[in-house]
Length: 452
Image (cartoon, rainbow, N blue to C red):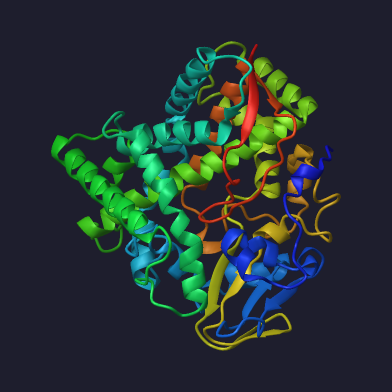
């Protein structure tokens, strides 16, 4: 179990502030969030309604699993993310539209289909490794940016079936700039303001969003024109039919979901991998243990479908990283009617959040919750944990459809890189959290990378 004060990158506010609402909304969760099951933020700011937060596995299971159909997406999440993720995408749609889209897309994410993509994951990691081998040695490297490049390369090949179909650097830069609108969208939603109102930098963000959407539409049209059937997820999307009705996706639904995979599918994995490398750089013993595991199981050969699932400690390191730094810090709902969650009354229309960041660092659920300890996720320990104590991908019927894809992808990439490189922290660097779409750090996440 490895302790470092840098693993706690901010101090919770005793009272919320607008500054934190814009720069790091997690600061507004009070210290009690990490030791109590429920808290609210209400009546503190003029014009802002009450919001409820739960950090108890049983309450979260009741909301996300047992009574999932009693809740809709909360208006704050919809307002914050609808400029980043299209409203026609699986992430947002509700009811019958959600059910049929989920059924139609599910075959693309079957385990055997994503396991077959392991060579693609490894090839993208090896391309990054080649870049690092030819880079000047000893200078700090922004591993968060590097992981964005790797995971987006994966998305190009695994989702689109091609590489070099568009300007990757321009697309990633436009995406990351567009995330800057999320915090403004959250504030506008809190104040019930229309999302068309301008804010600092909004005109550039809107231009970026139009470019991203147009590029996605162009990619879909080009793929459809090319014809053929490959392992690529876009081909499975084009061929998808609802097994009950036979319905296929409209172009708007296809573009919305393809764009969702391009954005969320690369960003969440990139953030998780970046934090994992940083945590392993801090904990050299765990890094060496992971390297030994990869060499014992795969030797010098590429990680393959037969070996990736045997990399148990690599998987545990990623899981522990996503506990300390979950890519999504919260997941929100609002009840369709007044109801009770445990002893707490939640009126219709008031947002309620599974407070994932606080849940993952909760004093009642975890021994030494701010320490890095991949052995927390040894199989026997994980089985003994409450079902909804750990939620990096959500839970219930709306659990992330790409969960299996992401875990295999991240395991293969992490193992490939750690076998060939040693990662060390940059002296004096302390991360500052800047969560918007994901829990990215503010600016770069620098590490020293040494060839082995």
